[in-house]
Amino acid sequence: MPALSVADAERFLYAEARLLDERRFEEWEALFTDDAVYWLPIDPALDPAQAVAIIYDDRKRLHERVYRLTRTPVLDQNPPSRTLRLVSNVEVTPGADGEAAVDCRQLIAEMRPGGPGQQGLNAPRLFAAHCHYRLRHADGAWKIVLKKVVLLTADEPQYNLSFIP
Amino acid sequence: MAVREETLRRYAELVADDPREFRVHGSVYTDPDLFDAELRAIFERTWVYVGHESEVPAPGDYKTVLVGTQPLIVTRHEDGRLYALYNRCRHRGAVVCRQERGHSNFFRCRYHNWVYANNGDLIGMAQSTGYPDDFDRSRYGLTPVPRFENYRGLLFVSLAPEGPSFAEHIAPVRRYIEYWLGRSPAEAVEVSLPPHRYEYPGNWKLQAENGTDGYHGNYVHLSWQRVLALAREATVEESQHYRQSGSARGLAGGHGLLERPGSLNPNSSWTARMMHRYPDYDAAMRRRFTDEELMQISARRNIFVFPNLFLFETHFRVIVPKAVDRTEVALYVYALKDVPEAINQGRFRGHERFFGPAGFGTPDDIEIFTEVQTGVRARGQEWLLLNRGQHRERVEDGEWVGHTTDEAPQRALYRQWRRLMADA
Ligand code: FES
Ligand SMILES: [Fe+2]
Image (cartoon, rainbow over all chains, first blue to last red):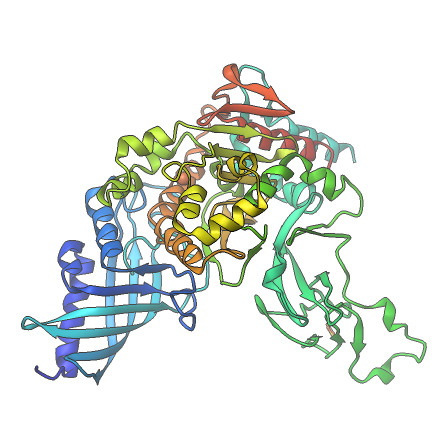
C-alpha cells in the first residue's frame, strides 16, 4: 500500500470539495467505503452512540441523504445552495491496516440565490470547521471511512444545513 | 392609558373568530410593536417552559434560559431544591452567569465581584466597608421569578405574580402529557444531551402553528416520504394514508395536538412494536398499565403546550422568540427512563433522520416558515385563513376535535393569543 503524503491528501480533499461544490453528490457518495460514517457532532466529546448529532450517517443513511438531495422534491435545497470550499492546514497521520488519518480546516461559503426580498435567500453564510478524515486504501484508491466535521458553531442554532457541510 | 387600551383592542381584532371563516391578520407576523406587546402579554404573563429537572440533576448544576427576551438562571442549590432566578446582579445589572449550562458553587458577578449562592442569596461583596454596617444583604439576593412550578419534572415559570394558576393553565392538556410520559414504565424522561438548535428568519408563531399542522405533510414532506419508500419502510401511499388517520384537537388555554390512533398491534404503533421487540419492556409496561391505558399511551401525538413548548415522541421542542422575524427553536432529545438502552438509541438515530438542521424533515418546514414570512409582506389581501374543518368540527369534553388535517389546534392557539393580548 502506498503511503499517503500531504500532497496526496490535498489532492484527495480538493477533489472531494470540487464534487460537493459542483453538486456531484452521487460521485461524492462513491468516495465512501461501505462501513463509512459521516458525522457532524453537536459536541464532539460525546460518544455518538449515546448522543444526538446534527448528522450521524452510516452508509445507508448517507445514501438516503444523497438520494433525498438529488432525486426527491426537497424544498430546502430548491433553490439549491451555491458553495465554495477552502481546504487548508492539511496534516497526515499514517495508520495501520492501509489507513491514514487526515486533519484539515475547511471554510465553506454558502449562498442560496432567489428573488428579491426572499427571507433566508440571497444571504451568504460562512461555516468554519475542523475536519477529521480516516482514509483507507482499497482497490487502488483512497476512500473515506470516516468524515467528521466539527463546525465552529456546532452548538449554535443553524438555519438549514442540508447542503452537505 | 387610552392610547394603550386602544392599541391592545386593535391587536385583539387581528383575530376574527368567525364561525365560518376564522381569520388572522398577517401583521401578527410582521409588526415589531406587536411583538413587544406579545412579550409583555404572553411570555411575561402566562406559564412558560424553561427546562426539565434532569438538566440540573446535582446541587450546583444550572442552566440559563430566555423567557421572552429576559435572561434567567435555573439552578439547584445545595439544599437539593430548584430555583428560578433573574440573571441580573442586584448591584448594577450585569448578568451573573454567561454559560448555557454548567456547575458552580456560586454565581460571581464579574463587574464588582458580588457573590451569590445557588439559591440567589447574596453571600459576598467586594470591599464591603464601602457599605454601612447595617447594610442588609438579605434584601439584595438575586430576584426569584414570581412563580415557579415543577410538574412531573417539567419546569415552568410565570413572570407575573398574579394570573391563572399553573394547575388551571395545564389542566386542558394534562392527560395528554401523562400519556406521553407513559411510554416510560417509570413515567419519567431524562434530558442530558445538548439540543439540536435552529434559527429561522420568521415569526415564532409559524413554528407554534406548524407542530400540530396535519395538512402540510404530504406536500412539504413528500421528499421524506420518498426516503421512507427508498428504505422500504412505507410506500408513499402508505405514508399518505397514515397522515389521514387520527385527529387534530384544539384545547382550552391555547394548547393543541395532532394525534394518530393508538394500537396494541406491533404493526400499527411504535409502543406496541417496542413491546413486541423487547420482552422486558413489554413486561414492565403491562405491569404498570391496563390495556386501555396502553391504547392511549401508544397513540402518537405532537402536543403543543401554549405558548413555547411541544412534546414530541423524541424531543421537547422549545420556541424562543428573538424578534418579530427571528426565532430560535431548540430540540431537547430525551431518554425514556427504565427502558432497554437499545430503545433510546433507536430513538436518537430516528430523531436525527428527520429532525434538526440537517434532518430530512425539519429543513423543509423551516423553508416554509421563511416563505410565509416573505409572502405576508404582500398586503393586497391581509387575512390568513384558519377555517379548515370548521364546518365539520365537533366539541367533545371542551375540546375542538377535527379531522387530522383540520386547523382546530391553530384556532385554539389564536383564541388564547387574542384573550391574552386583549387584557394585557
Ligand atoms: S454590577 Fe454586579 S457587582 Fe457591580
Ligand atoms: Fe412538518
